[in-house]
Amino acid sequence: MLDVVVVGAGPNGLTAAVELARRGLSVAVFEARDTVGGGSRTEELTLPGFRHDPCSAAHPLGVNSPAFRAMPLERYGLEWLHAELPMAHPFLDGTAAVLSRSVAETAASFGPRDAGAYRRLIAPFLPKWDTLLHDFMSLPLTALPRDPVTLARFGLVGLPPSTWLMRRFRDERAKALFSGLVAHVIAPLDGIATGAVGLVFALAAHARGWPVARGGSQSISDALTAYLKDLGGSVHTDYEVKRLDDLPPARAYVFDTSPTALSRIAGFGRYYEHYRYGASVFKIDYALDGPVPWTAKEARTAGTVQVGASRAEIDGALRAVSREGRAPDTPFLITVQPGVVDPSRAPDGKQVFWAYGHVPNGWTGDLTDAIERQLERFAPGFRDRVLARATAGPPELAARNANYVGGDIASGAAAGLQLLLRPRLSLFPYGTPHPAVFICSSATPPGPGVHGMSGHNAAKAVWRRLRQP
Image (cartoon, rainbow, N blue to C red):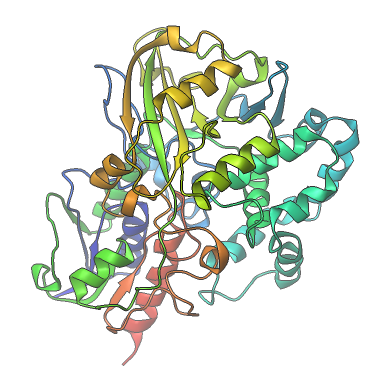
């Protein structure tokens, strides 16, 4: 009999497997797709030689992850590549605010009226970033806070809506950039704890950047898999699990799946019936005949580029999706251009480019024209660079990854209390009605992103359970 079976070979499932194998347990992972990866994959989606990331592409939480940093993943081929700027936010006048590794450079890009306010916002937390992030991403009750005073101070600033935090700023540049940071979790700007979302992304950039993985996001999953195998674990692909009886006998089962799938497989009925799935995205992977022709020079050297003319425009796009149930006429875009640091992703002189705008859950329309009109505002001539495109709306995203119910790439709405307490209001979110069954996906704290911390935290819960007499 195995000690642990893990269902799902995404970053969280693989991290949970590694953590348990490191403790000397026998572990096997079962994955329905023909390759490992989940939301961390790389594929040729457009033309030969163009290697795209179908989901996550830039990894501020990955390079900062306490779980990943405790593993020797570089021995297994993972290399983080850093663009000159982690992120840029261009404006229609050809200038840009930036999120730089340097706090001073970032503050200066906001203008004199907001530079001091930004430095004061960041100053209490950046020197204690590693401890703060560990405490923040280990909640709830998987570990006692190492620095409860700093965590409490962070909570006072971050738990209110981001609109409260942005009152510190007077001009549009800082407000627009910070609004874009919050929008990464597809949450309305006035939602609870959205201030914390923006702060975490900003602090992550200053601490270690927003890198891409050399060769693509698949490198993260492949490194975790190789490490697991060296620890004695096994990985089985093309193995769809429809019920618990499909799995070999084990002392514990850990699911890197949506709560919906877990309920169906384990027969939990309506246990997760109140879990809410959130908005989706419409994503386009481009093969380009050269770099994106951004008007703002800062955007040409940034790994990630946020595209939204103002806080009001970003807020309007989020409200349209989250509260009005429609696709925005002018979408806010998150884009990644790996080619600025990794020429291996495309043939010589070419580029891969990744962009998405938010749409309602399950939406079946086509946002291509709206996305490209938005890009043309900030990069005139963009369409002339397009060699090929691969589009994916909510149905396609859900078909590629069963955890993305209705196309929700966050595996659950990151709004209200569910941003912090998921998949149920519980201090023990990784447990289920069955004492031997656990959940470790992005539907559990600390939530979405390629960081493995949900798997790390769940592995602790499994370890404690298996040590009981």
